[in-house]
Length: 268
Length: 269
Image (cartoon, rainbow over the protein chains, first blue to last red):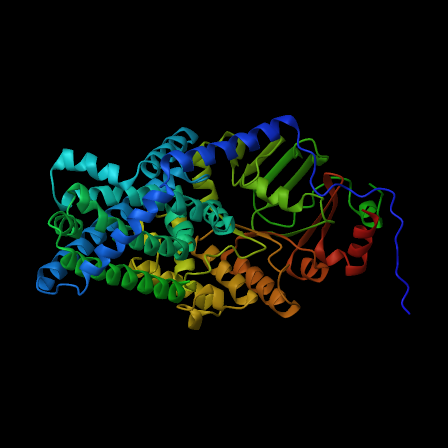
């Protein structure tokens, strides 16, 4: 027979540490705020019960997708993709110098680095739809506003990651070039950028995926692209046409994501 | 610091020049301390004549790398004076320092090459000592004469056939030889090498040291190198300077010392 071991322990620690009053108040406060938000802003059970059949109704009216205007929809989709490409290209090109100015050890002066970091933070914090609204007012309806909104959004994302990628590169080659009398631009272009390139390419591909998704919705605020077609289809209750538009958007986004993923694996 | 047999032969802190020309390095009363740490240098004096080959030895932490880095202000000197190639390095502004550095070839312990780029592009980077702009950033844009000179430098280190190979595909010894070729591309008057043989196997280390010494002789350039391998210090230098206690604790012509004596210096330090 196996003896049951009964260890003699004088004291067992509590499973949960006793909270101090401040932590307890903060935890309770956050939990209360979440519950309050759910009850005031979230859908009620009654609304969900009423809404679910409506969703089912809309989905049934979307089927089968209407292919009558497929050529126009595909052309619009192509223009949307061009918008994403153009916005992404402008944003990425400008992100390189902005990233250099924001990178520690590469920026010409700490004040310039702080200014560049602040600018990037502003670009990143303001949502792309808000940038689109601003540019629609500035340059008018259509794809130029969308391209500019995408470019700013890309800069907010890419410049930060470019700066980090450059900061993380091996300092050795930089020191070697400094020791032979190279200037700072030479060091950056010869040693820093080539070393940071794989990471920068991965970021750029992710930006293209992000820009493609953004370009689809920017049309909703008049910034060009297939979003306008989608809005018009819903406004006219042409749900079968809307279904076609949603499907082609889905195909484009999946194609860009898959291609981006494949390229990332090939390059890095 | 304890007294060694070699110190008795060499006057304390005295310099025995083996080169023939004027001093290319003149250090007086050099001191250095990192933060609140111990003094790495404490009143070090050293002269090195033009055309000489000097090995700097010493135990870990005696300031060998710090000394040679201070010569080109990769590390800022503490107290004292350093004159390098006739220039008072402490008085130099950024443009003056850049000009001075362009005359000094520095080979690092880790080759410090851009590993994603080809050997040829890395050697072309050496031209940035006298040329700037996109044509010095990559072999793709480099002028024909720069590419030809870079190829010649690779030939001199026996790596012409690896010109287009990415550095991360080369062995440690080959990479260090590419770094030597980049240094040659600079056309330096003075070559400083910080343990160029440290991270290499014995055969590759010896090849790199032999290449450096031969090239320095060919060009009549001054060679200062740090090494932990006593056989290299004796074989590839004319003069051995040992550091200890923040000063020059040993200064001897290489032919007058044996490996065993140098090892005794290490053990007494």
